[in-house]
Image (tube, one colour):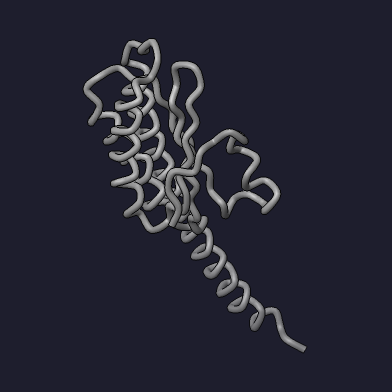
Length: 158
């Protein structure tokens, strides 16, 4: 039978391990908070850029084509991007970007957001556009196609 003196070092070792685990978790949480703040900045920048433009009457065909080419030229080089769809409704062109991103890799997703902002800077005219990113890893197989409207046109696929 162990005496009280022998269990004290074990207790202290256990407490030390728990404190180290807590410190590791705190660092992980701090990293996640930093990454989320960075993503929020990119999203807010995209929203400011998008909503600061006066809406056009109807997207011009050559403008939508130019925008599509510019956007596809950049996002097609990002490994996690799997498909890009477009819908045109009324006065708005909407891009639906499907990504396959592991939950612990936010840098590539962040790059996708940044390319959306860069694409907006390319346009010289006011064209009402919208972007959506859909992560395949976060959806079940049944849910994967549901966020994309049925009339969306597939314009690029890996």
